[in-house]
Image (cartoon, rainbow, N blue to C red; front, side, top):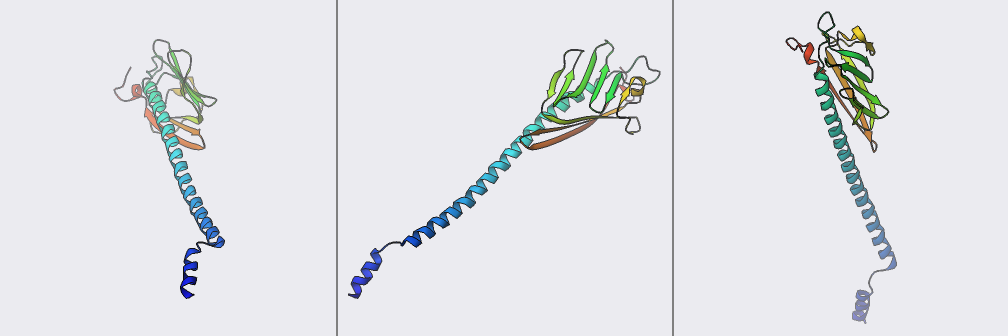
Length: 187
């Protein structure tokens, strides 16, 4: 009789409570695993978006720097002065000896570049901020808005752009010398 009882206990299997406890443990482990995977995917997505924004801003600023470095000397000025027409906190316009005008400005959420007096083209989209700051020979910041002869002391230009997409923000800045105003630069 004792042998038969042991045999019945061995064949009995899992109780309902044991089955429910197993399901609860597996559900908790599944929830934790899914949260870890979700966090990893979100981190990857944010990093990829940040890298894309950084690349776009870097390319746009490189183009802007190339154009700004080509600013010629103002032939009508009494001394060394760049041929810059106006500067505001979000734009800069200049001319060349061929009377072509150029401008770099923020329009809505787009940074626009107009070359050779043509229609402005989008240099960078999704910009939440764009700023232009000018500096004199002593690296002192000049007024935010300049026009005409007030632009003559400009020797350096700093650009800063902030992009935002899908909740990720990226800010890049650069500061450049206007080559024509450097010693031996000439036009």
